[in-house]
Image (cartoon, rainbow, N blue to C red; front, side, top):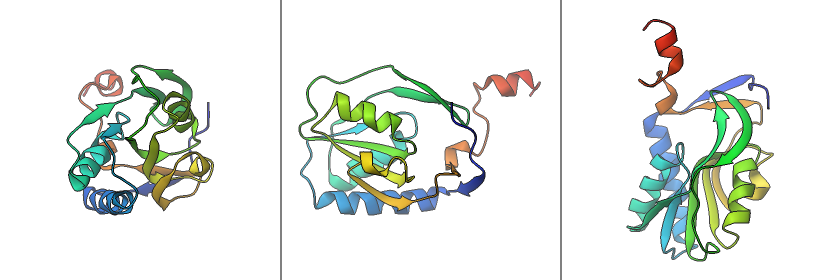
Length: 159
């Protein structure tokens, strides 16, 4: 497991939308793509924005869980897609160490992998990204601002 990063980089909904639209504009030059593949959970919102901007109606998911709170652990493949990835655009919010992207690259070798944000260790694994952040930076996405209603931390804290 990796240690919790030292710096925090908060991203607002407006900033995320702006950066994701910029990603879509860059991807428009590389298409056409038959479908967008979202990597839940963080990639769901960016994938929806990219799909809308590129006029792609087919949106799939590939679920790989590798984080527990702010700690990266052993990845688990929860759902996968058939095929080699031809015509697919995989979208995630962030490439950190590249663990998830390497799994995606093995699973869908011909897919184009794009992220909104990228850290140096993961950058070589993705095809396209918009914003680079430091490896020791924790990006606080807008959906991370509050505890989810199903959080065990919220229930155990008596809230």
